[in-house]
Image (cartoon, rainbow, N blue to C red; front, side, top):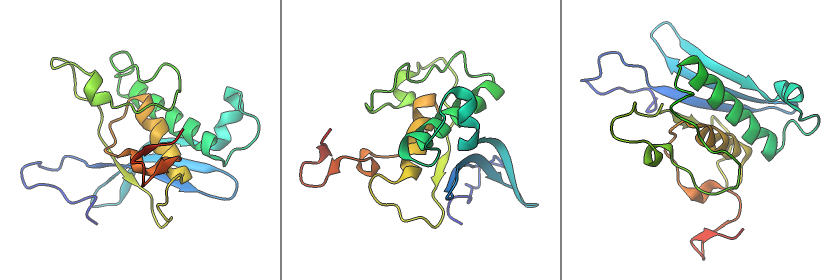
Length: 161
């Protein structure tokens, strides 16, 4: 409920959610916003679409979740005609990337949405966070910290590798 509450000065501006659901056979990523009549899906990507891009096996692992989030992010930016101005990450290195730091003052602001994990346990290294990392690397602005990614150690305060 807190994810869809709006400020009083926003006047029916949609608050977008990056919804990621993991089933036993595939990973579903959607960009959803709430209306009075029900939720509306803006864009969707499934891991079952990945074989057409060259990924044949392992459609439910962490890397497939990353690829599905990346596919959703690029698909949404192309739909909104922001794909030319927001390039995202050229090559996946695992480094932290925030699109709002890369953008200039005169350009359009990046597309912002909130992560919706549903009823899954949000532990370190969950596949939901892999999909979020893929969407962030595609060029979406999803507020997050590096504590949710695999390799994070509480004692070090940084990623191990």
